[in-house]
Length: 161
Image (tube, rainbow, N blue to C red):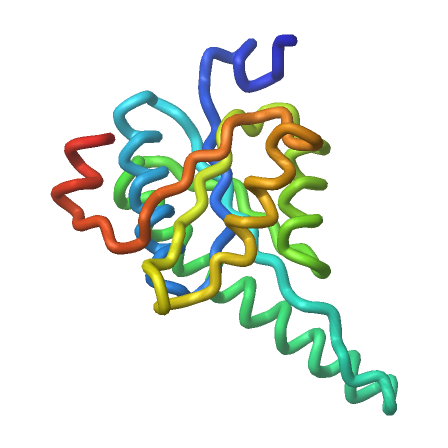
């Protein structure tokens, strides 16, 4: 099966971003690999749907605030991606369950070739997304899942990139 990204001769790495250290390590690795392979990077930030439904207007305001925070984070990370790779990433904000939104974006965008995700060291964070994606690789995802340990150093990342 030929994807749009493969047809163009360029890989596209997808990174689902948040504020965690392991996410930053995964993003840095994806950027280093993108630079060395002349690939592109896509960033996805998934915001949780509002769980406060008692007053609809309050829920709407909370959701707008979450979306604005997500967009600010993506803009900050886009600058970092541009500094490392020399190109701006594609940016995506979605609402819902992280895993479901990652899978949906991969299904919708045939130019995404590799999913890069950071794994938190034991007792240092949640690996919910890693576990969910790993369970979906054979059933639903059509691309490789690259899991980067969140405690890797820049030197270790560079040696692999």
